[in-house]
Length: 164
Image (cartoon, rainbow, N blue to C red; front, side):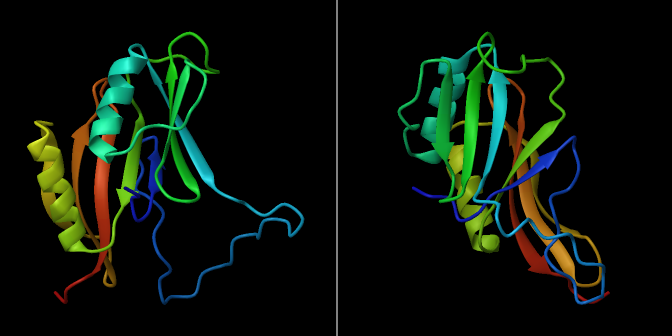
């Protein structure tokens, strides 16, 4: 099963906002000769088999066929979540997890469906579903849970802010 979208938040920051109507400077474009083709995030685990089993059950799909030290889960056609063991990757697992993976879905009902799925699997919710107003135009409806080694996973949908 494919997840509708994926945004990743690093160092505890909020994920990238959708375009607002206010004017802002345009970000530099990727060179035409080197367009961005996708996005991959790697998380590092002391117990890779347990982490891989957690994500396979959560996502409802097995990882790609890979070497034993890494597990790759396609989240969309252009976004992949990589799980790496403690010994063979570029980085090492740490007790502090200053990374949050935010999975963007389409609508409040989709957030609610993921919430039900996560709870049905016995996964503890660390932040209950709520709508957070970001500004006059944008809000998010989201909840957060943690994977077996403490990485925060947020399921989020953009919503329009209500007046007031």
